[in-house]
Length: 439
Image (tube, helix red, strand yellow):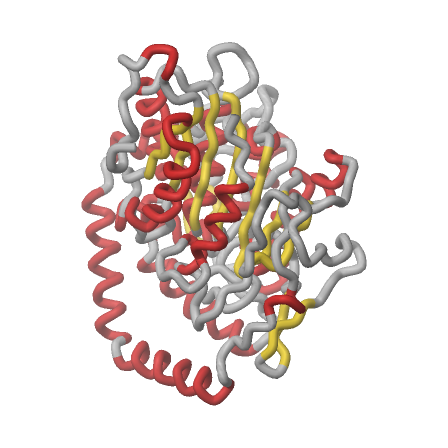
């Protein structure tokens, strides 16, 4: 692996790498955020793989929308494949919003015939998301503080976070004026936010995701301030809670029993920050077993105190006080970033991205030819958001995946899960590396 670009193996003949592993950072991020993941993968699998850290959507370029960002990543994958002609397999790993971008890129690659099980296609092996907001970034409106958060979020993403922010907040809807004659029976679906359309079971996104041999979704059980557990795990409600500063779990009767204290594979180590690995119902049906994939420590083994309550409260109040004090500065910076993202946008590239998404969501009988799907913001009521989130979660559950529940200490575990700040993230990445299918 040379930097972010992946090595050129055109002169290495038949001994070149067989497997491309693509990594994508989150919104406002850059390739360096995936450095630890890339190093662990390269150290483990060596010359058999090319580990590539995407760089085309770094920083404010991530504002331009999931469709545009996914198109840029697709171009990177095509260029990487050209430099590594011996590769015949591909895996995609996305962190935070990068997981959504990766899902869209997968659909583009699938539609273009680049990935698949045919001759001269890249066989899709692993899809991995780490703390990805599959169901959006809104909070459940059942609490007053969550309703306040959603109100502030609407203001921030509407004015300052670009198309990507609006899509993640589920406030984007396509402009359908003059397009009704082309939409046909899909008109009702095209009125929904992009994340809902990407989870449509009959769409290309779902078909492309199903093509991957192994699908792992990592979610922070608690203390992820950016992407809470329900959306990261593609579920409809929290599975975990805290009680008297001690970690505890709530299990639904519909889920498998808690995993054993030791890994199911005796050749693998114990992972102290992996709470449970559970298959979705579709995955259980596909494998014909409720067996778990490399389960790690369970809650009764972890027994880690989150924070002393008084100190956690004091630190939280201090953080909020600093944020309130710096609000004018923060808003000014976000405004500057938004303006720079608009100036940095390439109209020709955006048009190419929109053209690549024509007739993407549905089968060949779709009447969407020629629709470029520009978006506009729409404020949703709490019940409508909950319905959308539930629809996304249910459709993704039907695709089939393994959900990996992670417990990490700290006030904000979102950056920790990819090893950016230590504190247990390295164990999560080790679990990921150990359970990827490579050969």
